[in-house]
Image 1 (cartoon, helix red, strand yellow):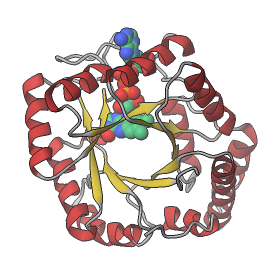
Image 2: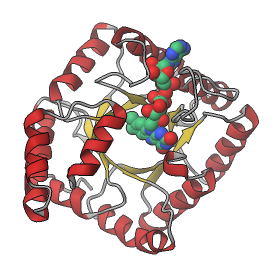
Image 3: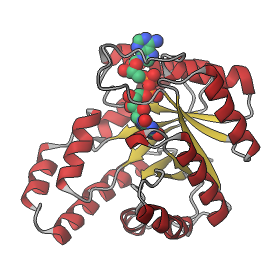
Image 4: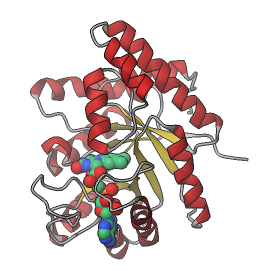
Length: 285
Ligand code: FAD
């Protein structure tokens, strides 16, 4: 029998005093949905490793649920990464989302500065130094990473991360389910056996959705973009439309047997909770 879908919620370390004050309540509300774990970004938007670490501790303290730090290696050293891993181990962390991270805007190639060039180097390092003590999740790009030479080269790079020891992958956000299913087919044909969890970004604003999609190279279907533009100044109608689009996407994914969903919460409980209700997902434990 296939296992029930797994759900995870992504947070980022808050950057303002108001964000810090609000976060425990957001986490508590989301925890009512009993996700399998929360993940916490690192480096995205300038957050440092301490911010990630503190947010991981907040999640564990507020919920008792599992929390997985994202660990980026761009610009880092083996010594820094080793120290971060040791600190997480001592805090009881058992799962890491291993990433290269975004390159500085001035970078001339996909090769990161520092002692790790790619996420695959980080995955290999974690396995070499910590064996199976961490479950490792990596990023996957159904619509290709924007800096990749071509889809084939990007896929080969994904395979490398799995060969280095990744246990699972979380995808970049997408609004085109076919891209995800094509990617999963490709993984199956290549003999990759790890689960690929779709990354789900709720739609709550025209500007932000456009910016996210442009930034990561995700296709925003023309009809969705046009309708969001039309509703830009009618917040309630835009939220309803965004909810309908993302609900249908999730329904299609779940109906076709995805292993679970990874929600980009953007540190807000409301959008993820509304999706959850619409999807009639139950609380699993
Ligand atoms: P990689 O897998 O290393 O790939 C990066 C690029 O290099 C790709 O174009 C790939 O094709 C190419 N490449 C890989 N290996 C080789 C090779 N050997 N030779 C040539 N080219 C190669 N960013 C943050 O800063 N913080 C976060 O917390 C964060 N969380 C994320 C969570 C998820 C689920 C996702 C999908 C993305 C996240 N990101 C985060 C964004 C991510 O860091 C960027 O997309 C980054 O540009 C690539 O990271 P990666 O781990 O996918 O890199």
